[in-house]
Image (cartoon, rainbow, N blue to C red; front, side, top):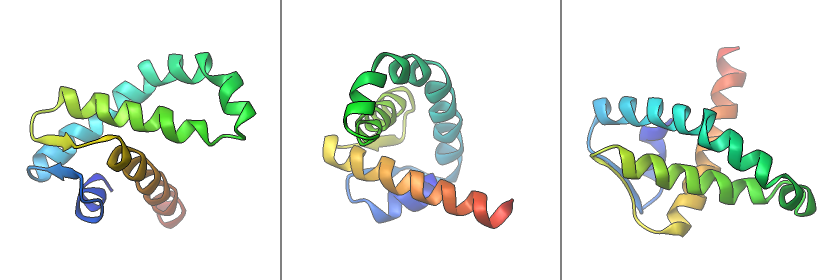
Length: 99
């Protein structure tokens, strides 16, 4: 899904398949640790915006993962927001197709 996001969104690039796999693992780890804390801390704002603030939180987590993985870059905040949106949609679609 991350490789597809890199093909769809202009500001996101992945050096290769191996980099995409490593970046996926890092995204999962960042989302499970830092993301969990951020989502708890920003829950009132997320509730106030009816969940739309989660796009911003996910974009921040995507940029953080890009900073940790060489060969995976996210250039700018708008590509991060669009990338997190497309990644979420692809993730849900894959879950429906596989499970």
